[in-house]
Image (cartoon, rainbow, N blue to C red; front, side, top):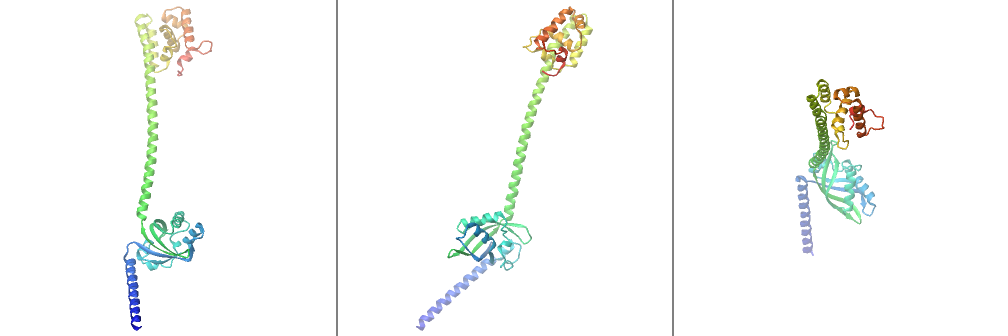
Length: 313
């Protein structure tokens, strides 16, 4: 019997030594680990049968830090773990932060075990730290008693990623702005090209239908001085729409009718045109009448000269 008691005592002593050794190893790990290691107790314990919203509130409000190594303390801006033991978790992990509510909800739905749970917590200086947590719970009789966890400070990485996303968003916005400006520039270039071609066509029409015939008249007509004046006026108005107006195929104005129209545009009377061209007055009137008909002005009460000098096509 005595021998049995001695054996039992020896086993108990060895078990006690093992417990002490494990506690010493754990204490050494806690002290030397670069990873934050902690324990949080729930006072009072939380029923896992309670509604989810209630559990979220109790987890955020009733959590007390009961174990913390120095790495845990330094995450919050303290020097030693003992400085934060006994503090409520809500001092750091604000219940009002929607990100923390979302993370806690995910923790509950995942069976109270979670790896890589991101939390946004307040440091001693008031700044915000971002931590990645792994958590293991202790549950007895459907009551969440406490949980052990480890955390990594990813604040710098998180802020860098946030800044990168902001920069990417700004670059994307600038890209869209540049694309819009590029489209507008292309439209402007197209419009300029159209206007340039229009100007070219006007000039060519005036040269072909007004200037060149006028030059030929200078050679043949004794009233060269008057033709030179007409020619001078035509050159001054080289970019007008007159040449194209009177030379469109659908109008079918004759060269003589174009010539009469040009002189009307330049302010000559029928009598002056008759004298300059060496034709009868009634012939001038006939050409004017035919031109009006072909230009679609008959019975409209529109003055021929006003129409010819207008910029409208």
